[in-house]
Image (cartoon, rainbow, N blue to C red):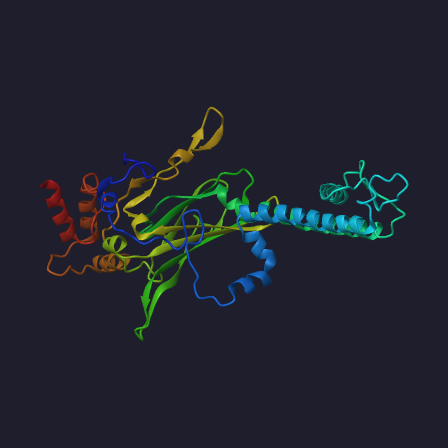
Length: 399
């Protein structure tokens, strides 16, 4: 039985895991999906953000959002309290506050704190206590009307802004989980890149699909260098293409064919080259109908050659239900995989099928190579593409 490797807690297990010593750069997208980019030299950046004020408010951090919320209400209270105090001061209400025969604009307003309390009561419609406006003062009614109207507008905008910020569909991504590592193994006669994705909610996404982007250095035929060149990576979910029926966690695979940017990469390239694999999952939230996107990334050192994901689906006879064990979500097991690029594997397979001998070695049929690799499967879980390479690895094991 294959040994299960827990990638959550175990490091340095086996040949592939022990060689992860490369000091890689930080990823363009973090594991949680946040961008890891810094933009410099943008002219009139603040002006452009203010012109797009709605999205700017939604994207600011929560501490600034609460600051805007409290500042909006407090600013309105203080602004109208100053107007009420000046109105009473100019009308003579404060100077004649103790005259029982005097008719003030605002009854019992004797100080600025009284004016502030009256402003809060007016805008929040709490109901007046001992301080209230007098109808015989013509200036009070339009100011009270203006504050109540603007108060409703401010309250609607600020509370609506907070509600929309809370209800944004992007928070749905926190219940979508990706495996910590990606794996490369042989499956259905192809080298395949595999990842695992799951949804822990009972209300699942609909019309879900996933795709990948390989970011690496690229030099054009004209010798122009693109340090962050994007290559498309297509994933398939079993026999469903790129569409996911994500009721339970699934292992998605990318077949490394001649059209794949991974076609010529060898195991050493995965350890030495600096490239990043970005994964993007998009779907519609069933309960709200809003679109959500979840993102993650894998560095070249987080791609395990010669491993596949351990099964996590078991049928519970006692409860008569399928059981998904998320404890094993990131577990991988060794898998017999050619120790060469997909291109070399296909070329060797073509030569073997045609009966052509290898360079400097006798002719070997495909059955002989399979027998050699099968005899070594227990000692060497990862085999090489040629018979001579297999024999050399067998000698190392025997020594």
